Image (tube, rainbow, N blue to C red; front, side):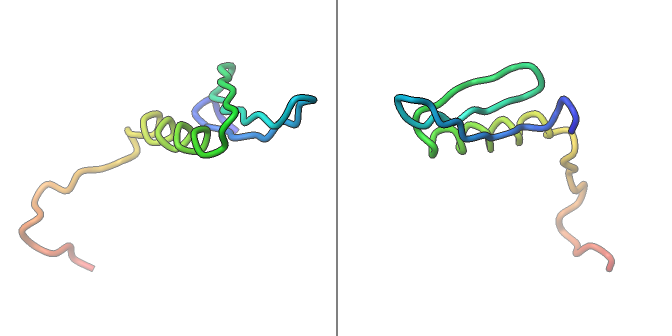
Length: 64
């Protein structure tokens, strides 16, 4: 795994379940699984945005 990988981890605590989103050394804890998954997905898209490419001309179909 690299520092650019976003990890989602379930942690069972004595007072309930926590969801941990990690990026490198940074960690953020959530009580709600849906919120953790949404945040992890958005973070993943932002961190890996440089991998996206733009099509210069959309008026013609790509050559396959």
